[in-house]
Length: 222
Image (cartoon, rainbow, N blue to C red; front, top):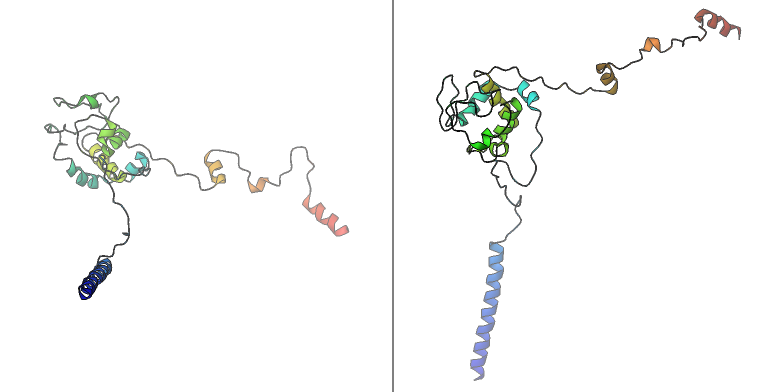
């Protein structure tokens, strides 16, 4: 009886030791750690990563000043599946965009625009096109256009410059002047009063003038 109990106790201890050893070994093999970058980006419906505000872009006038219509033509290939941009081009899934810059919203004859877009007041200005290309669904909530938008501000400017060259040819808006490098330069640019060095020693009106030669002689006599 004692031998049987010793045998059972021995097997129990052996099982416990084996389980402990396996636990330690598996922990060493399948050791987990924190990833270098926790989480992952989630793309929103507008094509931008969620969780933060978009960085402020340069004004459209500044971006148009350095826009490349050739690059815009390459980017417009993303739009070519739905739009034509040739004179007299047919409407497709989207309207023909020849000479569209500056026109009113919903200008293309024969195209069934959504009520959402037709309800947007104003024309297709450079600023309006920039906002539209950034996110059609934000610009006109309820629009039928499913394109997510172009997140790169300069790419949008390139596309707008290309579109403008296709039948519209409107003058580009003047880019804002660079801020003055210093307060003095800012005063000059603003037409403010700047004291010239040559005038700094000029005596005020009514003050007695001083003869330099007489002043030298008086100093020698001291």
